[in-house]
Length: 72
Image 1 (cartoon, one colour):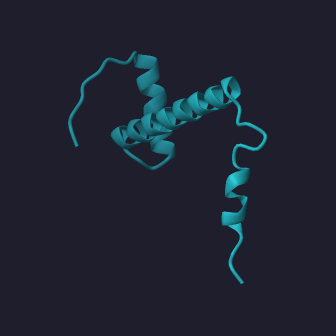
Image 2 (cartoon, rainbow, N blue to C red):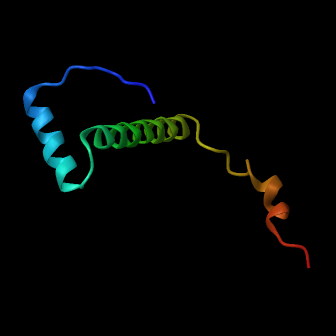
Image 3 (cartoon, helix red, strand yellow):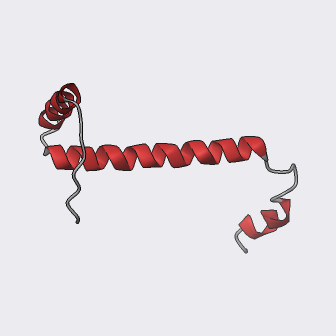
């Protein structure tokens, strides 16, 4: 891991510290987890916007339907 320094206002630090203590984790771990969660939410929102802008065609995946069946 790499040490990173950034600035937060006092109120936010207090909230992070309270939440970290309630989660029985360190401030660093709490912030790491929050950043991972925020990035995942951002990526999911981008995917949703992409599919909304260019939805899949009605038969776009029908060519794969036969591949989903287990052989007998």
